[in-house]
Length: 260
Image (cartoon, rainbow, N blue to C red; front, side, top):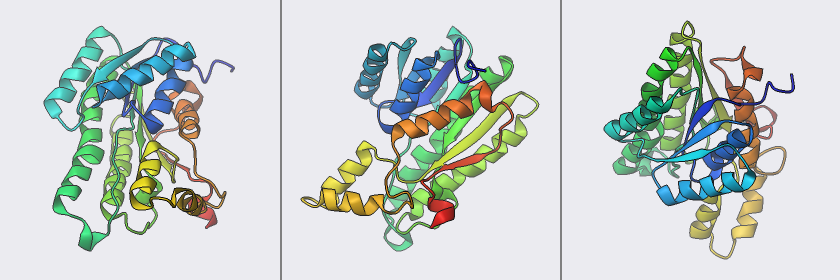
């Protein structure tokens, strides 16, 4: 039982691995024995994740620079990975956020959110599904959000994209049961990532600490989650310990959804 949470001998592709939640997941997987492909549009950020994994003493990490909104580039990147061996795990963590409601969401922002958060997930799953089928199975984990199923103020376009991620997760889980491919999602509440710090610096200069404390209180537990906490749940859902879980959307929200 002590090995249920290990990923020894497995290969994982983590998108958005250059920062935040994606970086934390990549580091946790590597520390648990997986060979991890660090997929990110920013090579220098993925390089930094690879450096941290080496410092952690994790299994080899490989930088895979890729724009997941580009179908040809995504298929080429996954094809290169599959040519080297199995793809056991795909984690779709790449994503962007947006602040706004229906009437002030610009069309170009809507399109950008859709390209990264929806089309990017679609393209990566589509590129990985063939190698997983031919390899006898696999695990896909998508990063959704509580915004997929709860009403959040000023998150119109972002909520739309995460609802789509949730729906795609259910469809893939259903369609590939016979191929021994599991597909689940994690729906975090607010997680303390570089995005949060950049947002506060831009919109509340000089009041960052005050607003950080205010935002932290949105969760009943009175704090934001940490990327490492998302990574711990991701490890469980991508390991053999969760072999009877598919088509699930797991909230990681400090009690936000049920205890407000």
